[in-house]
Length: 602
Image (cartoon, rainbow, N blue to C red; front, top):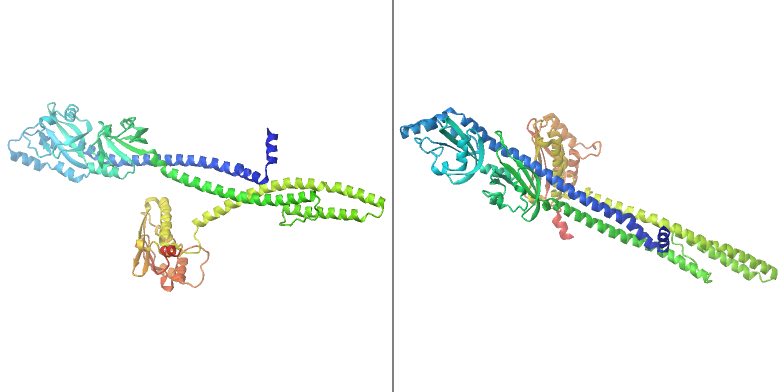
């Protein structure tokens, strides 16, 4: 089998061998790596999104727990409030007595005003002498027969949560319900605290994925989609019923899309309550970005491979054409035409073969001339003829040498094919780097601001909440072209020096505005500031005629380049006071070239 394969290779043309070697050595590994990286990219995107979803769910849980724990803590205090029990137990003889009792106990109203997490509070009591003021309520028959009311009366002191209707405004609220002992078995009250639904919905509205809070009866008590308010889990098109689970991570088909369902219990400090948070996100939406990147990467790879095939085909044709021309000349010599001369078109191995071919033909011509000149004597002629035969036999070694040399050229061409591919890849890499690196030309303010934002995001990752920033850019300035690395060094200076001796953090603001025919740029920080003496030294350094040591991009670099580009009035101006921060300003004309003008000329 191996010998047959070698025989097939030996019978192939060099051009085809070069193309085959490219396919085997480059195309197949690139295809394998591309498929592997695409799969890993999808896996990474999915795991990253899942981790982000877990973090979001944990954040929602903490913030929602803070809201409902307020009601839990308040119920504990009120259930042991003797003044509340006295108001509910006392048998009143007149409306005025009830009014005085309510006036002397404003705690429920104060709690509603104090805690924004609470929407309303009401206390049900069997005391018929009470007057219904929507805080103290004598329960009607429909309230007494409600499941939540009977359960609260039967389980005094236990907290449970339910999604019930408030008879005052007929709206449904997530409510804490607790039975309160008023002194005897037959004298019990029920405390109901409504949680602020708007606050729960606001917390959930910040999430990108569908996020719900449901109670033990699968009522949706809060959601980040308004159309789900007040609905139940039965209104969600879940094929496998994953949303009914109590906790964990599940997969299901929801609304005809493959989805992940994350469920986390939302318990309060008083214990298990049946509340849970459900986060639903489509798997396709997670990997959509990775798919786009994969498609783009595959497109680039295919275009690169096609370009490489074209180049290797051209290169192999160049080699094979030269070898074919040499073969034709050898054929002519074989037919007796000794007047052919090879044009030497290079100094490589093929050029060396051409020189050896010309030398061989010259030797044959000389031998033939000697044969023609040795007609004088028969013996001498025979000797000449023998000599010619001998030399002719010797000359037969040269074609054998040529074929061996051709095989060496094939191997050398194979090696050169790999070198060319490497060169193309290097050029491609150089081109890609040139797109990432700033040249000696100009860039737009928009691109400069994007680079500033990238820098600030990196620094924010480093300093976390200690660093805040704000970019305020007039849209009219976005397309104006400026020298590169003008704003970023100012921001870098603000971050480095603004964070010094400032444990509580620093806020960086970049302001770009257009006024009449000029653009004004300011970088402002609320850092430690600069003393008057230090500020005077910096101003002297900016205007010093001597070159600064080193080639780093700093304030003086920006100052000098602005003046060289726009004139002396365009340099930096620094304002700073110790403890109040620093502001660096410069102003340039708007009459320069912008991207739109460049596009029109293009």
